[in-house]
Image (cartoon, rainbow, N blue to C red; front, side, top):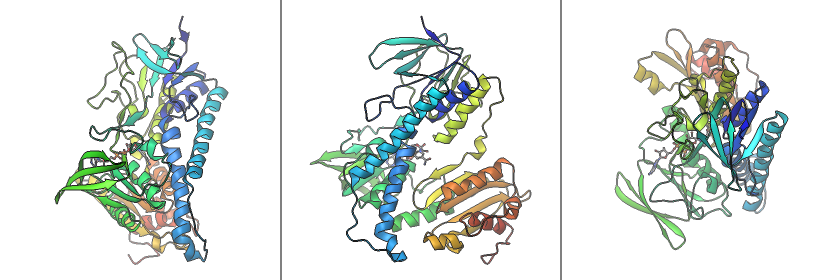
Length: 474
Ligand code: NAD
């Protein structure tokens, strides 16, 4: 006998737990299956985001920022400290406590919403059956007319630099180092490489980031990437572009990296190596024969714009389908699918998904870059404003960066907003709202912004689109 539900969600990461909670809120009998084991050896809901991604990395980014401020900025405020030191075990312990609070929070939300939780590895079988191999290796079967696949993603491993989680680590390993490495090598100057490279740099590691591509942060707006590159260089992050790594050899408790750049073959030796070259959909083993669900050439589940796989009642959301691997994209896909299953008009606007990189300064954007608009032949105008001219940013001692607003040359509709600077992970929301409501640069310019706040940079950038910024010469 199999347990019967209205909806089964495979995966309790950001996309899956949102789908499960929303389905239950809508009165559907819902089950969610996950197999992530936390540090305490027990099922830990919340997927990569809560266990080894967004939340723990932000905890360490915050701890390391405090340390960096103490050692670098406090003296500007007249604050001194003798022998500042970092206790890595306490920092990691604080991070683990935060993770446990949030994974436990998902378990409580499941209970409160009457979502039935199953621990184990789920495989989609034909005819709307999900088999679950429990931690005791016993297999049970669940059935439901609607099944949501939310299996997430896993780190891509390089064949020549296999993770041993001692010297060569992935994002999870880099959150759990037991001491500050003297030399940390990072392969990949993407989001993970920059965020976790920043954590250990701020704590004193010499960090070398090797990036195969010739451009820094190629998906960001060029002006924003330029400011970020300059600030990271000032912080001592050694980012080598056009550096393709081909070998990582363990020699006497160090890792010798061989890479090729414009000057030819180079070698560098590091004490720890973080490999952050992207993630792939975690779909291996997820689908039995005959489910009718298709995978694309990158192993992602093929879905339409409503996250439906084409097999009746089978949906897929989050990192295991096309689109950016962002928790908040997964959240909204999960909610939309639950609403569609319940017969409601679930919807996601993929054009207004914000991107955030939690370095210092932070980087955030929504919409199109200038390069994308040029390539598409769309006429545009821009306005920008530096944080160095924002009173609040100067008072905070965080003046690096700028906000840039891009609007259509004729209609003034906002096409993209790009930011680098203090607190821009929060400021980007205003741009998302404005774009979601099809706002113009003039709309943003005519909204009253509190003074003194960092949000004045957004206001002034919008004013600057029409060359009427007050606090800079247009
Ligand atoms: P990424 O795709 O952002 O960056 C990987 C980088 O590695 C690329 O720039 C690539 O050119 C480079 N690379 C690949 N092979 C290489 C080689 N052999 N030598 C040198 N460089 C090489 O991937 P990531 O940083 O691993 O992040 C994975 C996913 O997780 C991304 O989709 C990201 O969006 C997501 N993520 C998002 C956040 C956030 O939103 N703040 C945080 C962490 C992760």
